[in-house]
Image (cartoon, rainbow, N blue to C red; front, side):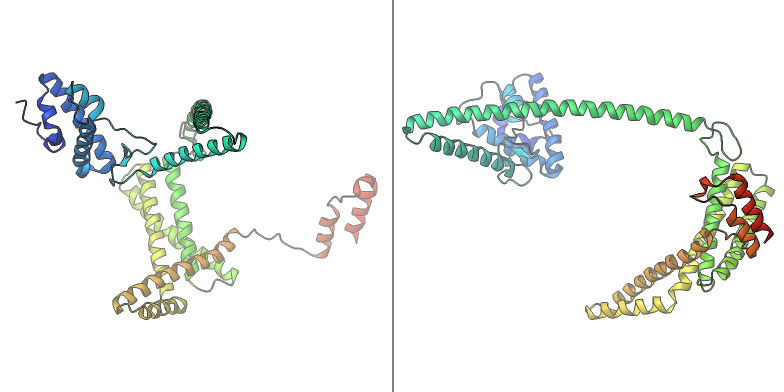
Length: 394
């Protein structure tokens, strides 16, 4: 029926139902119905699906009112070319006829463009007034319009040049990106073709799955040993920390070794065995971290921080439950800070270089005599050897 509105589009086409009824052919109604549905989806992406029908209906009513009583000769052409398309007068995606679709207010971007045009007109008029103050009003208006047209044309030409430069620059960047992607693809192919640096398995990307799992497990065990050594006693004595770290490392490695033995006894493949060891090592790391935080949470520093935060929350007139919760959060945060601080002391022991053994004065003098000096280039070889022999005999 021509008078019935399409299902689901009744609210949109209600203001222009007379124009819809004038569409006589079913093909034209199908085109208009598809165009309305597509524009409804597009407007919904700007203002939301719940307001899209209202916004589009107001647009159609506004465009029909702009006809000022003149009849629409071609309803299909009017819908597709004038009634439905968005007419943005600025660069804002929500602008339609100078009004924002999302708020219904005057578009601020359009006002900015209008202000720029008015400022340009005032600037041109001021320049002409200063240059030729004795012009008649007719000559002044004609000259202002002519100069304004020239200025707008000049700005349009400069904008066109900027757009061309932007297109060239974008093409250059895209070419550079394509070249960079090709280089990355080649580098990835080369990396994938590398054998495993540990066991020599071909095409392993530098490290095969089993060796990667083993390395990850070893790193997790080392971090767990550092955490255990950090809370196992004082961390100021480096020698004591080193001994404690070795004991913790041995204990954790023994636990991981037992997990490896159980996996091998079950006849699992090597990759599964490595995965089981990594899982056990990461579980040990989590256990040691939680245990360390639990130990540090009852320290004097953590308890003092929790009491301080609870007092602050009570002073803010919070209830006791909120104050206790904030204190526990502060206690946990303080424990994490203390753990980070003590781990720094432990890692200084791990990263400290092994000192060279220091012998007696005779060995030290011989070693010093064998070092070349900066100004020793003028010394004859035999003199240098005789001096070293003399030092050795002393």
